[in-house]
Image (cartoon, rainbow, N blue to C red; front, side, top):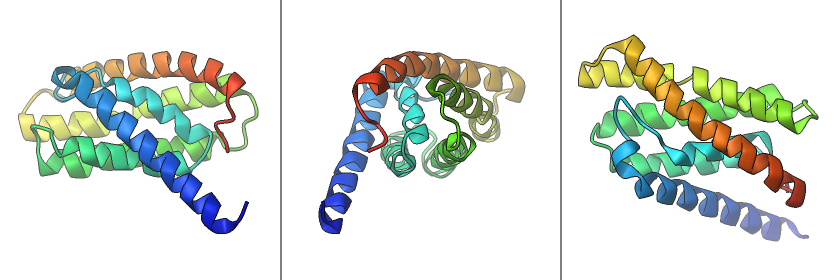
Length: 163
């Protein structure tokens, strides 16, 4: 495959994943923002362990969806920063790991722990208590990631997600 075709293929995958992220978030919009949230689209964060292109796809999806956030520009900046940081960390911490279950575990732990950024954002902007907010957003993240880990475990056995 020539270089321009590979680039087009990669950009297409980035666009599709970003669109799916937006659609999944908006599908459950009332639960996607705030101190208690369950953003189902966060299950897609596991894609970063398969290919670093998905870091950009998820970050783009997050920017777009946070345009609709009640927290405005603050969520666009810090919510997107959190997505970039947690998916990049997941990629770099798991890139030499061979076992899929371990890759997904690394991603789940990394993404759940980095939710302190969102808890801090909500604490500063919405004046909610930090620790209870960290617990609720981390719990919502964890639930989404567990669902995603199950999905991607079986999907990766049938589809090459690294390509």
